[in-house]
Image 1: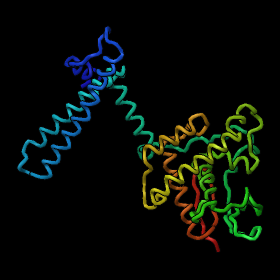
Image 2 (image 1 turned 60 degrees about the horizontal axis):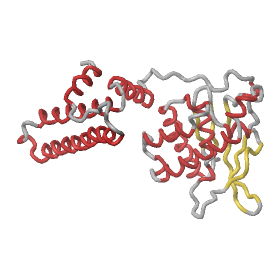
Image 3 (image 1 turned 90 degrees about the vertical axis):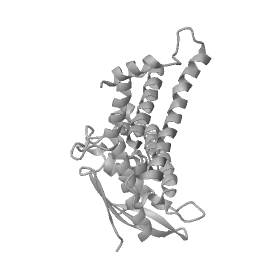
Image 4 (image 1 turned 180 degrees about the horizontal axis):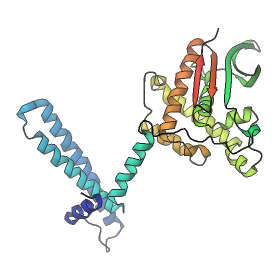
Length: 299
């Protein structure tokens, strides 16, 4: 059945429609009706499953009852969609689009064009890089230094936390964003690869604001990861976290990267980070063309 036709027929039986003469309070109550109905029907569905678990084969009407409960849920979804001026088919298509973005079918996701492909080579992020993370004695205390082409890259870092938590290795997050997403305003600044040939674009994408956003994103994801065992052994990032990430970068060029690409970048960044933390350093190898980042232990 066509979803919009289902929505039309379902709404013929609406006992709390929105009428032209309704005031704002009446309209709000009309919307509350399907919302509370959804909550009630989901509870009924759970109750049916509870009976099935409890009674097993002695609950012979389980399948029929579940179909009925699912149908009631669909009715309330169709009704709520209509009252919010959504076509049910559009709601369903949006859901499928989001699913396809986060879980693309194998073989359907080709490597995306790098974000700076159209700029001069001297304004592009290097396509291959090898960067070492080394602990050095600086000003009488050990500090973490990134080394690229035999020169320090960026400032020496410490955890800046009362309890050592490995945040001194967080620059690997920026390197992973560069390798897998082709994006890192911070790394671009450290390497002096800003896109000066396009001042307006540079002002937005390679500016201090973009760098602060990337640093804030890394700090936000670190706090989330800390509550999730730093994603060890996990294959997914929470949907709410991915939505937050996409919202944070919504005005930047990296908004073109899908939730699937962001999920891969986040999980891979913590794979590398855990190795760096465990070995107190090491070397990472970036290949932006192949979209890879690899770890080599020190020594």
